Image 1: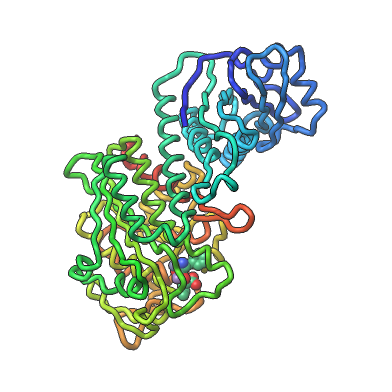
Image 2 (image 1 turned 90 degrees about the vertical axis):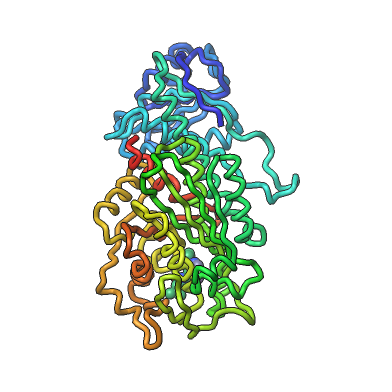
Length: 496
Ligand code: BES
Ligand code: MN
Ligand code: ZN
């Protein structure tokens, strides 16, 4: 996607579509008024004859507007006085962009400086617009033949129309938004790919591609190397699959050599059948998204490297497939994790924590400033928070509030849940140090408590994205969340 800033007039600019805000009671913004004047009132007449009321998220597309340079005008609702909260701003921009995309427009100029979110500046708005534009233009049709492919080119050029000299900061803000959008789309691609293609080895190859494209350092550990390290828990999950497990490590060294990195650990279960504790078959296809935590790490690594973020960031991805088979782990098996703790596997479907615990122990070698793991970990989290908020678990108040704030700013929100030690007793085992399930009550909390036992040597937070990483139903597909949250968190950490 190409982004630029144009010092131009809305009525003169030559573009396939010019986007202008209109407030409640059909009050025109400056940009809308100029178009109205040039077209001898055509815009206000059209508004009068429509049910457009200026509510954020409402749009109205006009064709054949006389006396202006643009082929079309898209009016977008800006609320009462243009004073929008973050949610309304998001909705207004998002709907305008999806309207552009479904109209098949490839090039648009937005005069939306009067569209403001309370508490944020124009740079923030530009970043948001760019990230949403890249997201709106997203298509996933690599698996379709020409028969199924959508015709026409997607939105590819977006300009911000302003009155004045374009500042470098504003262009930077757009570039940042593009990086976030691309990172999010990469996470979506990986999530949407079918599980017969997106295997642990595919993810490893994807990482290697990033060496060249993003100048990242990549190291992939194979099964023999993981055995040597004592990753008995991770390997137990993979042993029922024909697909060999991989541990993928990606490094972005943007900060000073001595700076301790932030380590992102992403659950990469490329397909989760449940193993011997087999899942019911309805909607099992959705378990291809069980590598979305890994996908979000890829996406975030892409974003930070594209924006050359001056911060050290490491991604660690345990990638496995969870299958039932003659070699598969049985309920009742006891394994020894890399940390030395023994685990009684009472349910082979609670596999995410089994691969994450070894990855969390592995993360110690980076002497991290903080470790964040991201995982489609529990159905219980979907029950608790639905599709709106990601579950955030951390014993560290400061780290937790940094992540909550990043979620608010990027409008990719998380909500804090407890990881109190009081829940730990649910995980006690008669035969090993710990059991891998804690019963039905507080299922997402006991899952986090399990992970906490392996994350005692550094500052740590866990994001349960089981509800937020994808949409089901008619619009089934990966959302790319929480790439915006993670990237914003890192941007702030870098002091940008
Ligand atoms: N990948 C699932 C979690 C999940 C379920 C994500 C539904 C999204 C939608 C995870 O591996 C799992 O199966 N968790 C079990 C844990 C249970 C056996 C303790 C669950 O949530 O049912
Ligand atoms: Mn499972
Ligand atoms: Zn799973």
